[in-house]
Image (cartoon, rainbow, N blue to C red; front, top):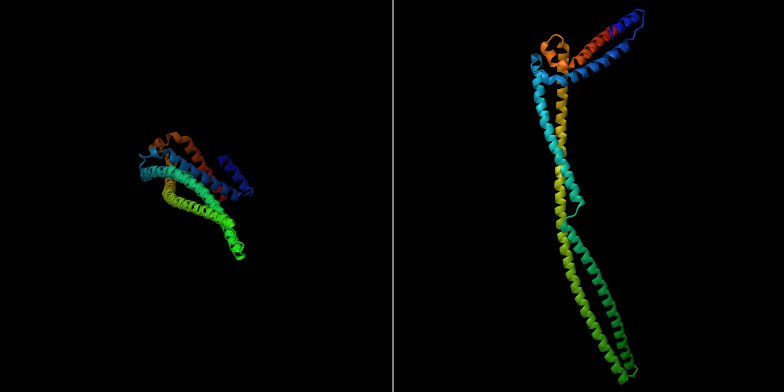
Length: 289
């Protein structure tokens, strides 16, 4: 709102043209802009106002808050680095196997293959022994039937008994071979259990390392949240102090040498702020406030 526009508006009011709501809205918008300008001005020049006695409270509070903010930013950066490292460690622990674990799993897989081979071999022996037992039982039944029918023949009896003796020998050999395989399977099972035990130990260690990383992530996230909350409060308070400094300097820069010196590089901005105050005042007059 310029002086010329103000005069035109006053003339319009004289003819009954009232734009009260519009003037109030313009004043509110300009007031908001003025507050932002005061805050920006204060932020730009606050380090220059140490010699302005009236701003001693604001200046020294800002010095203290600025130091505290720098300290918090440093701690925040440290915990963000801790968080990044913890995430990397977690990804590494969960995504990679240790050499020991890989070797144990390879040994376990090898044992699985060996056990499967031994089991197949044992099944073959059992099936072969079953067939031999069937042949033996058939010959035994043959001798019993011939004896019942009184048809025993010395030559047939001898050949049948020799065959039965040979089958018994084969059966005993197969039984002995089966027992050896059973012992070998037992040894492999023991080795299998030992490897599973070592694998569990290795996996538990793996999980413990991951849990440490998870704990670090949780602690770092909590610390980061706390630091950000503290920084938010500090930033809010600093903005308030910036606004107070900007308001004081912009009001007194024209006639106070110390204020003028502190804001010598911001004269154009102070002039704009002065025009905004004038416009706000004229809009308030036009709105009847």
